[in-house]
Length: 345
Image: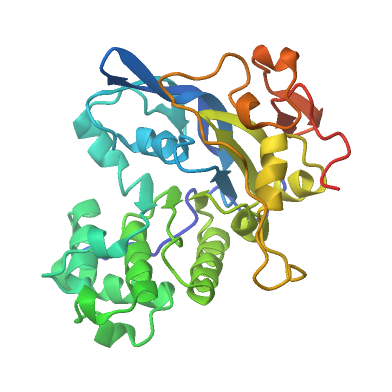
């Protein structure tokens, strides 16, 4: 009987400490369109980025910005009405256009996802140990039940679930929300994926548990060399944990940069508005936080030009023409005719 290999760096040739880690995922001009009646819904409108091993990329935006749709497209988790075009290459293998059988091989083994609500993802009639063991044997069919159970307990310890041996036999309803999310991360790691997607994975958790889960993801990212995509509406969360931030609005990336660069030199008015909505320690109790006026646009009837124009205090007639991403400095790009050249001040 062959034992399950220890979780390792996604590629043995990759060292998470190297100055220029290899690119694991390369997305180019990705588009996702849904058909709704006579009007197509442009959920993702030509986004491009690269994700390197051992790095965390945060994709940030309001509900309906296209951030979750963009990553679900990579795994073939969209309904048949979704029309996907462009390119998404994982270690050189094209994902766009793969048939369902091939995509099943990608899910879990190449890319895994942790969703927002573990209560809806876990089977309430099965022990957590059974569910992790099942995931292990799905991805490693040569592994026996005993070896898979041993690995499941090791994964529970890896995700810092207290009393892992006892929790192995418990059911989801016996665990707290944070514990259930740790179980979901253990299941996601069962196939030793190259990319781990956390799709609003901490949104339903209290602040303390949220921080614990994020610290766990960072630890796994650094220890295993796994690339992480963090999907969130919380720019503050990205500031604390991500290596790189991409801000999405109405299906497009409107600003992208390494985290420290972005927060030092914000250019896009939408990014600045999101930043202004983050509570500060100096914020007086019971005071109202700044809000972004208006509403996100209807993705089936996008405004002409810049999609943020109807809500932007800097909008002019020039904004009737759509701005393309331009470089503010190496690695920092934004799409705006009237950027905040003074940065985050």
